[in-house]
Length: 239
Image (cartoon, rainbow, N blue to C red; front, side, top):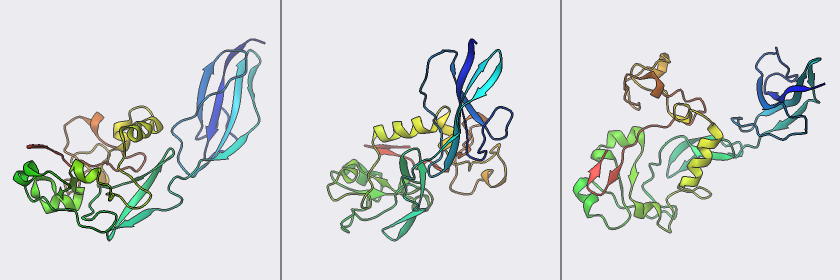
């Protein structure tokens, strides 16, 4: 028989994935008659999934053997990390483990103090490591974390706890790839005034995103990454 379509089905909740079943995902690879390999993305870390191949021809749908696998947990089961007397909640996405909050430490990993930068004038004059709250507002720091100079981020003493690092562009690219299409809303905290998701997401209590009267930019925090706007300082400007 001619093959009209083939691919894979998978599920976390259903141990017998088949068309017409509940909580099923599938991916078609076309109608080629040869064997195939494919990649499944968007899986949660530390979860068990059931997967099987399928093929469709004029006789109906045929299914392959059901296989199961458990995705690795890059956080090693740790739900938080304590650093400089603060507990940072963690989240596993793909093969990466992330802090769910911006850094707010006042010390390097070796315990030495990071110089405090009090205002924009001091930031403009800075020629070494430094940290400070956005717009000099400690209330902002309490909700969104601190800002750090590039000197602090690259200092050999280390800004992050043992086993952690400042993420690179490549790290962020891997994150976006793991999340898949329309990644921004999935990574953003849902907290914003007028959030279309209502409940605790619809709030004007810090921390939150400003609402731009466009539901397409509203975060849904699908993966629990809970990204929030911490601001920036570049030379003599901030935002």
